[in-house]
Length: 238
Length: 291
Image 1: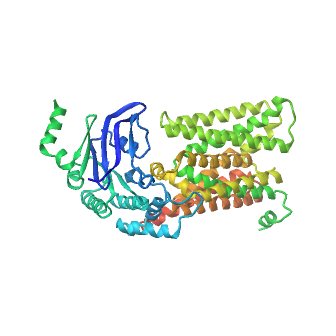
Image 2 (image 1 turned 180 degrees about the vertical axis):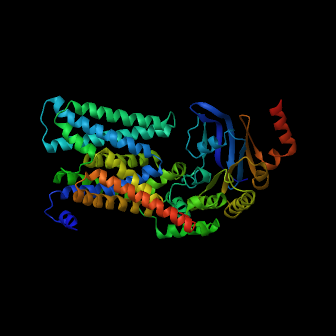
């Protein structure tokens, strides 16, 4: 197994000193595909926000391993529904934002970067949406553009926050196949937040399961085995 | 045609007023675009009013401190008061908005009426300031000195330069704050810069054309352009052009028919807004459009 890229050590997370989850201790390994699974309100988004540095932890700490003393780049894919449709942006405009991390303030995005963004759109099979208005795209099309944007950051870790929310079954299947393909081809550490057990079972190697204030961590095979799941749900009923 | 010839002639007595109106018309929509996109329209209503309270306070200061202000120093004081009040107000309002507690509309409505009431109270006790204040409320863009014009031009050029220079950062933090953070952008810093630019523009506009007209120029051109713009470049260019054109044509009409300039400008912007809305509706009936 490769070395850990993210390590949580007795971490408590939440808002206004009110812990949503406590005692999280686990490691996410480089090039792994890990799903963060849990029902609504279980703390999935809080964990993600803490990891991305958007929310400070209440206690404990987490370590993100550097690569040649450079912190890893997170390619964050938010839920498309969270982005305001009022902005008149094309698919290309949105994807181009992925290159803004490398462009200095006050400088234009270089021609090379623009070409690279086009490549990312092509890789995400979203090239045909480049000139279309982002707000007019379907849920699945928007997610592809957002994945292209995340790829344009040249990420070390791809973080996807419920990318299939509001996407129909067929598009969900295609989208997850595509994410799996990127993970395999680029050996990209992938973190997928979802509440869809079937998707996790099919695509993820590891699972962080947030359930009843507890954090369970293991391989997909062991954690989502019928015996283990029965045990978890019986624990809840009792 | 004769009125147009008059206005464009070098010896035209009110030429500074024309230039100032057009400058405000071009510049206000550029920051107004961000108010509209960030859904801070009510901030656009309250801010000019709060800014005018800053002017009222500045105009009252000489009286309270027992000295007579020259027109130049009076204007400088008003500029400082207006800028200070707008910048502090937008920072506080934006902070409360971000915290997401309470009722934002209620807060902004309260700020608006209290600011208006305080302005009237301050000026009711100041016999020197009252006259100028009434002109400002009506949007009478008449007494603009060379100094006022230069101050307006320099401030607005600064705002324009900052907006062009940092357009990608300002767009990024406005559109997707979380993503901007993951790219290592200091979102608080960029927010502060944007609010500072909005505050400066509003204070300059209020000082020249009054709170009502400033509000109109901040929002109507941006809302009009938003109906058909396909990208950010089109949105900002068309909003600015609508504002500048309405300011110039409005001045021309006001001069021709002896009308107050500010309200003529805003009525014209309203007509442009309605016309664009109708054209868009008709086009969508003929052929479904994807704008």
